Length: 176
Image (cartoon, rainbow, N blue to C red):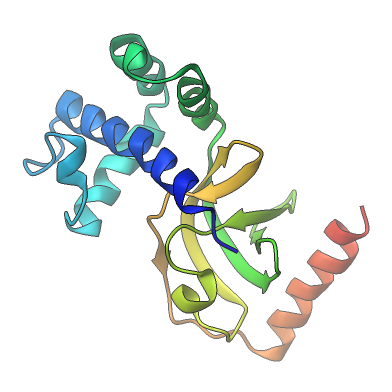
C-alpha cells in the first residue's frame, strides 16, 4: 500500500532539504545544492549523499539546529525520529493490503510493515517473491517507509531458501 499523496509530499519536503544540507556540508557531489536539485539527480549520487547521512546521524541534529525553524513542529519531530533509521538488507517477503512485509536478513530477525511512495512495491520489485534488497527504513508518523533509494539484485531464491525464510517469518516473527 502507498502513503497518501499529502504524506508523500510531507516526507519529501523534509527529506530533500536534509540531503541537500548533508551534501553542502560534506561536499559529496557537485550537483546537489538545494532540495530541488535532488529530483532527477542520478540515484547513485543520491545514494552517496544518503549513505554519508546515515554514517553521521548527528547531521540530523545539526540540520534541525540550523534549519529547524523552517519546519513545523510535527515535521521537525519526524526528521528527529529518523535517527532511529534501520539500514541493511531485507527480504521483500509478502505484499499485504496495508503494507509490504520486509524481513531482516540477520538475527535477531524482525519483520517490518513498510509503506511505499509513488510506485507500489509490487510494481517496483515484481510479484515473484522473495526478493533481496538493500535500503534504509525510516519511521514516518505511525508507519515505516523506505527512504526511496534501493539496491536490488536479480537473485531468485530456490525452494529451500524460501522455506527457510518462511520458517523465520512463521515461527520467529508471526508467532510472537
